[in-house]
Length: 355
Image (cartoon, rainbow, N blue to C red; front, top):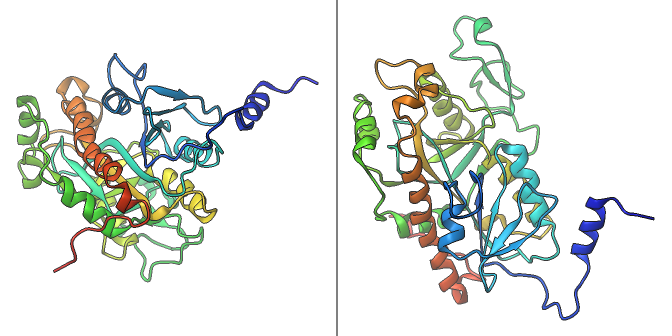
């Protein structure tokens, strides 16, 4: 009987090969979300700099995921493109985590991708390490034209009757709204990278200068700690930024501070949480780094629609610099973890003790 192609290929990949040295043990898995064309030598997406500069020359098919994986020669660094949106990310990470060719039980995970940034938190070209990732879509929502008087917006937490109801309802889906990364590991990564020089140019400066009411938005690119709101809906605008700021603060009990908006990270973390429960990964070894290609709202004098769709206005002037920033900052962490494996294999690094 002829097996279906997908089943047959998956079965072949699972079969041991003669002389097979066993599973690959990556020390670090680099998670990116998209690539524009080929993995190297053309217009770059999030994956290309990692492939070229870390010599991820070995391509391993991963049929159950969005994209195959790549490793360097000794398998210490593995890279994957998970695809855009929470569903693609969750499926791709689960496919990798369940593949018997890889032992990921001690691997560190670095999500390294671009994002929108709140002008209240930072500037385009900046790099933000998240301690909290908050899902922006598990909620009730009322159309903006039907919001009751007195409500700040139409987003209502699951289990609540109105926006930002207190006390906050219990998470009916088992902590799938808020992900709290290991704060010591995040502090270590931030401390290691906070002085990393980041690219800048005159076009970026001109865009920054338009945000006259936001001092952080006018700074040259810098490394910061700031939390991430994950939503497959590409939202934009001043009112949405205000909602995101309040949403993150609400769901983290006031401990989180919204900085970046991205489309995949809650899906990635959901799969990693389940894989950790199964003993295949260690959720305490996950880092999320997002670098700002654009602001998440308009500048004074512009509308949200102009800001979101006005590519001719140069709103993505930080696209290439943000890709560069993701590699410059993220690679310092990757190299430190690989070089310090004798120490970090069993004991994850921790940042300086709080004063």
